[in-house]
Each structure stands twice: as structure tokens, then as C-alpha cells.
Length: 349
Image 1 (tube, rainbow, N blue to C red):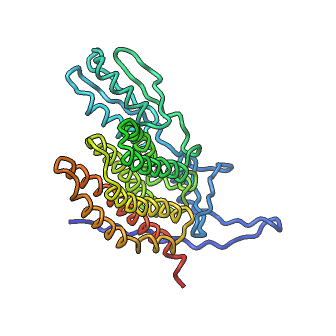
Image 2 (image 1 turned 180 degrees about the vertical axis):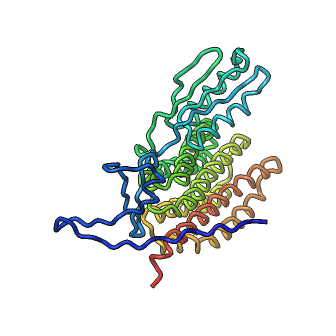
Image 3 (image 1 turned 90 degrees about the vertical axis):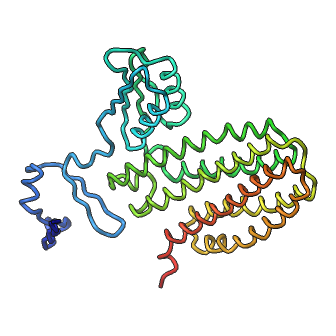
């Protein structure tokens, strides 16, 4: 049997004018006792976006977790699970993560090397503060107010757009060196992706920091999480394009290349515009992006038709490359749909 818990109803309080210019209301005694408050206790008063006021007692204004995470490793553990545990602790908001060897043993050289590399390459704002044979300690030193969700997402989008454009340029030149550089750049996008997830998780567990991470409402967290994922997946498809370039042995004909370039130009412009629509909070711009999806489908058919003239050994890689360009447009459309949801109130009467 599930017991239904009724939410206690609020109490009405009259606004009082004291001293001719100061407005006050009394606080419920039960709330005062419950939070162990007394005369001159300092309270935190915050104005919310919906016009309400939030009154918080001391202790509830602390923003981040103060607990330390401890991960224990044996010499038989492979680095992969240890890295995933470390990343998970980072994502849920821990600022200190200790990876310790069990039973006074030592971490293996392979474990320590992999953990340090992953921390440097994936965890924004994290430094290795303890590095001994038996323990590694990672500390997050970057305050979330220094790098907001929006500024981080903008950086992600700029890098992702550049990756896609460079990939198409590398395709035209069949430049394998440029393609490898694009693949290496993907880790930068992954780093920012994990950092934004960390911020959003902290905001969900503590709504007080919503404005400090650059958002307006708690409801924005889900939208930004989905957009961040779409940007990260767009970067993955730029990487896929680069990987398929490495498998090509000959430059494409002008006809085939032109078809892919047309499709790519539209897809990446949709992506850039979807990000602009997000930051401009432009409902109509987002709507126009979605309407371009049919144009991408037509260009894809033309590109696929042209690719049939390519040798049998190259055609599979080329089809996968074209698919990644299409997916870029689809993720742009996904972002635009979320922008519509975030800004629907701007077009309602």
C-alpha cells in the first residue's frame, strides 16, 4: 500500500510597514524552531524568475558537494572501470576524488597513467593534487560561475562547426593529415560536454545555482542537456567524416565532391543557425531551420546518385560519409526543436 503524502498548505501573512520605508513579514515559529534559528540569524533571500521569494536558512546556501569521493582499486582492475567511476564522481559534483589502492598496495603504472591522461583530457578544471604510488587525488579547482553553461556550449559549437568545415575541406584535398587533426580535436568537445553535464547535474540538485551557471529557469536544464548532447554527436559525425577520408585512396571527381559540398554547406549552416537561435531566443529562426530538412534530403539523394560512379572499394566509405553529413542536419533540426520549446511563450498571446 502506498501512502499518499499531502503537501502542507501555506500560511497567509500580512505585509507590515515599519519605520516608514521597510516592509516586513513574520516567519512561522515552527519553521524557526525546525531550522534552529534565533535572533540575528542570517537568512538568504532570493528573488525567483516567477516573482516569488525564496527564504533559506544557513546551511542551505552552500552550492556544491563538500563530500570527497573514494574509489578503491586492486592491481587486477583494468583502467577503464576506474576512469568511468572517476568521471561519474566528477559529473555528480564531487570536488575531490581519491583513487586508492586496496590493502596498502600500489596502483599499477598502467592505472596511474590512464587516470592522469583521462583527467587532463576529459575533466575541465581538474588538477592532480596527489600523485603517489598508492593514491591519486583529483581536485576540481574551477568555480562554475567562472565558466557558464552558455559560454561553454558556445565554445563547443564553434569547435564542432570548424571540425565539420575542415573535414569537408580535407575531403576535397584528400588531406589525411588534416583529417587526423580533426579526429584529435574531438576530445576538446568531449571535455566541454562533460563539464556542462556536471553543471546541469549540480543545478538540478541545487536550484540556487541556476542563475549562476547562466540559465534562467530550472526547466532549461533538460533543454540544454539535450542540446549539448546534439552538439557532441555532431562533432562525432565530423570525426566520422575524417575517419572515412583516411580510408579513401583517390580524390573524388568534381561532380561527386560538388554534391557533397552542397549538402554539407546547408547542413552546417543549419547547425550554426540553430545555435544562434538558441542564444538569441529566436523562435522564428528555429522554425525556419526545421523547414530546411526537406532540402537536405533532396541534396542527399543527389549526392548518393553521384557516388554510384565511384569505385566499388570506395563507395561504402563514401556512403557513410554522406550519412554523417545528413546526421549533422538532423541534429541541427533537433536543436531547433528544443529552441522552440524553450521559447514558446514568446509567440503565445
